[in-house]
Length: 445
Image (cartoon, helix red, strand yellow):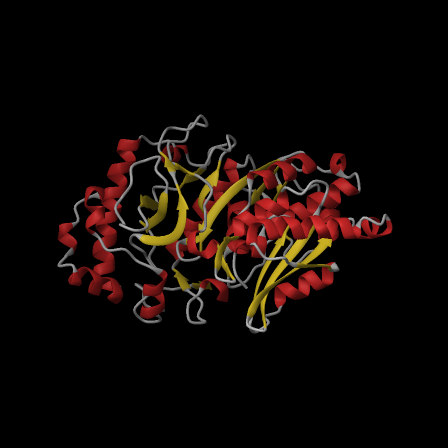
């Protein structure tokens, strides 16, 4: 289903004209209202009149998360507090110097956000008459409320299911005949494992799932789809840009369509910051063409992907971006070696016959990094009773050691301990939490 054919299927030439017009308006707006950005432009000898269309985009300076932290609070907001009707923030893990990155929203920003999420929910084939469970938290971060916005705007009934245990979510899913679910992939994998283990797949009415808020692999997607008998769609968003809905997959599942009438995307070389041609992999950069509260020009996401500008078979002309590699945020330092979280994900997801949740904790012991892996095997009691517990732990240890080069300690942990680790912060330790293949929901704790 296509929510807004006039926009999502407009020609590339029409889109370029619209983007150019909005970019010119944005630059003037930011120059006169955002102090930190006016200073950046003046340092480059730029004035608003120098920008006449998207062909001038490369003249403009980049914006980084550090810029937002340095300018916070007064220099960040382009609107007076009286115009801001909502504040959100990233969690502590994505901030700098112990600060969250704040975002303010005007009513127009909220309306744009709702439109983007309505398009995303429609891409998953969900709409009026559907019943959608929202399994994100509703808090400072934007994921829960953005999913709620989209589901309501398309006319679906919403079940706010934040903090639901998987068993409770499944019970609600069956009782209310839910047809859609929006959550992290790690949580949905846990739900899918329970559904399979209890033989409940055929009792569900599910049609689709939308998963975002953390990195996930194609292998994870395939397992979720197989266990639940549905399609699972990838979605992207950043608190700094807006919540979820900046980009989402359609039924073809061949990249996430970027809402280009609201977000102008570029791919640049991370080292030179030169713009790369379509199809090349590089750092993803966004310009928010319609945001009022905290508009951003050429915002560096520090994530790596590529963009495909060819028209999709679904009929949409909006460009599609691949899954993200999370750049420096994806790298752990263990005994002087750089290790990718994604590599650990892939190693754990490839273990045959093991359905588990994991915590990886890196701590100091006698000035050396020590790695502890806490695992909650979905069939832990069966595993222990069968005498295979030691063998399973050995497989996990070998998989992690082959990636990080350090022999980890592996422990069985109950689900309550997994949950406790998520909410704790041990000084001197870095913890990476995940279910099956998502370590720390993609972020540091």
